[in-house]
Image (tube, rainbow, N blue to C red; front, side, top):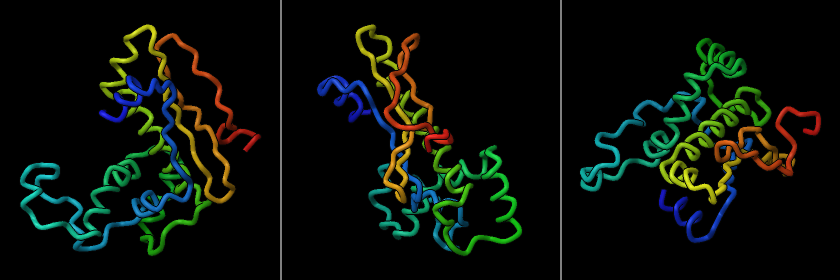
Length: 177
């Protein structure tokens, strides 16, 4: 919230871009089962007691970082992700998904949508949207690591009653992609 507040109030930022990327290693890892013993749920996460506990292993830290995406993977209703989950129940993944794997790309898109919502619903943005002279827009874009192109996910939001400016990038799934 502090970064958003500084950007908006001091730097007068009016467009916030949440940029995901196809090929994201964190998202790929979230589609696989955690390694046994990687204790993804350390006690008292984020508490003062954390500072007196032994430093978690790198693997445990990664698992905590991707846990919200793993939960999104388990709950998503996107057909590509559902099919992938069903297949993974029969044949657990032993290697990361390929960059063009439809479920992988769908999960990246779903995670981006969720993060745009989180930013839009943050206290800072909610307060700014109450001020009539503050037009702040949040955009969800995806960088394709293979092609070097950026695509608009079509989930941009702005103040109530205000039209969101057009993106210079083609929409995901459009004929321009």
